[in-house]
Length: 146
Image: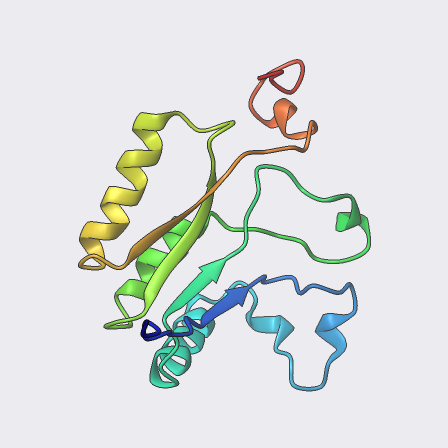
């Protein structure tokens, strides 16, 4: 029996505030550009040139507890990925979206738009939300039980 050809897919995982509260202090970091879309376009272009398969933006429908210690801002990733699509040619564009707090029609519409703008490069990281604090962001008294 022959072994099928195996491939490794590489993605750049972008978490703009960093994975550590003091990440902004690293001498090569550029904290002043965290809100600059050209910074992310350049990251994506460099990632594409390095032959990575995709770029992935972390997101969630609520802020983490650590927000009091560091910058944890999160822009809506589909908008950022649409801007990145305009500056790249081949790299996949992946964003998470919660099925707990987003209606199916809106999810389909958002990802279809990105897929169309990027000529088929959109990817959806399907997630549910476990953070009960997110309910208040959607005008709900408590997190859904289902």
